[in-house]
Length: 340
Image 1 (tube, rainbow, N blue to C red):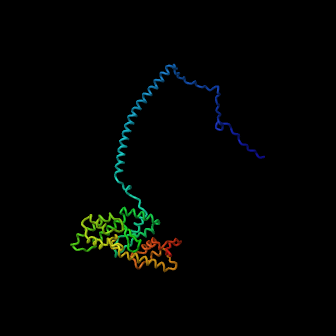
Image 2: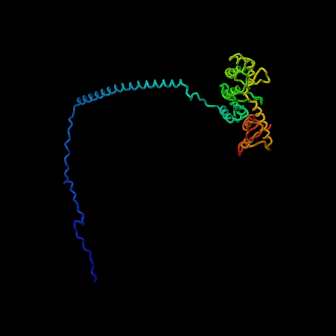
Image 3: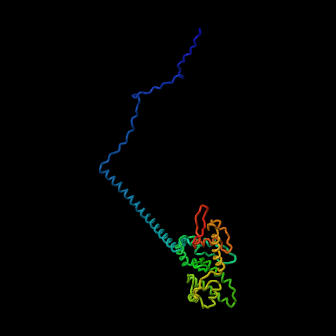
């Protein structure tokens, strides 16, 4: 028979058993007595009130002393602030008296912006030494409101920013030139005159014209008597002085009234012919097309044969005259001849 193997029983040993800790009973716990409390002696009601009044009085005295110091400090601060405010007010008054750049700057009008843009795009012509100018009809094509153009143009003319000239190309044709360009044009016309030594003294009439006539007469024309009265403020006037101004191209005699003159741009006669020829050539070119219209982009690349001013110059002119108009299309602006 097989002998049954028995596991040996484990002997109880301190290593195999957890020692049990016996907890003390509540009766056996000894609670230490509390520390002796310090007894605060009780004060009588009268003594308490005296102590309270004394404490309150000391606090009031301290506050009064601190408030007195604060008041003096506040007075010093207020005096310093007042002096600083006075200095600031003085500085502000000085700044108001001195003209600033922001105050002198004025927002440019639509008409002035259009004038500056077109003058910058004025074609450069070698044969004619003429400063840039703009036709009034060109302004009408850039600024839609014609009444606004006339109003703003009149303000610029009264401020002597621009000068207006009547042209012989049409009944309602006017040229606008900035005053600075017009004065430089006068100086160039003066230098082009080939005078004898005996007539050099008559060049002083240009100084009279610039100093007396131009600021006093802002119209496009002037009568002979008014011209002589203004020139006489500079010196003794002769008929040769007026002839000298006409030879320089500053004055042109009116056809309707021989005793009156138009103010003119010197050396502009060559361009007047280009204005008339360019109008006719551009209208003829568009009229020969099938629908009398053409896209603006390819049209501006077309070169004119009988004008030195370029196609863009005449395109703006005819748009302002109402002989052409712009039609929007998917391919771009379309220039079309206005049918009668």
